[in-house]
Image (cartoon, rainbow, N blue to C red; front, side, top):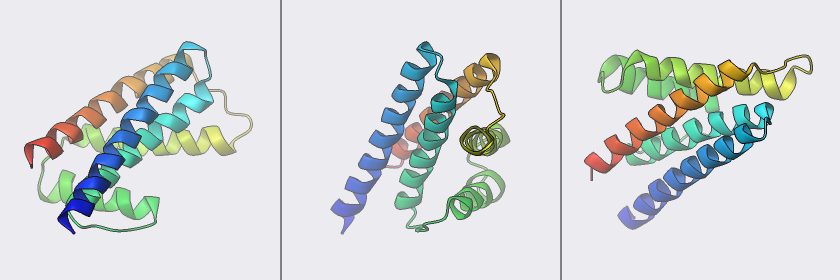
Length: 132
């Protein structure tokens, strides 16, 4: 069972890294709506890896975000509140980009969120590797 859990964690980390890479590639060609989508999923997948580590299972994005917020930001104070802000913004802008036909992503906003997402993913990756 432990091997399966480790495999799932590694797969989720890999999906997070791939999503970040896709975000960077699409940023270079000004596909900002795609960038916002991939930013969110890079954050989602790395938190999913964290959830596997702590045996938290859910199929709901909002429950995963609430769990991360409660456990790692407020209770255990492992991560800074800026990380919660990045998580919330990445979700909100992904939603807006995917569903609001009038929304046109601003270059600076996308660039800043991509930067923040890279820090977010690295922080959780480092934490996960430190826990091994």
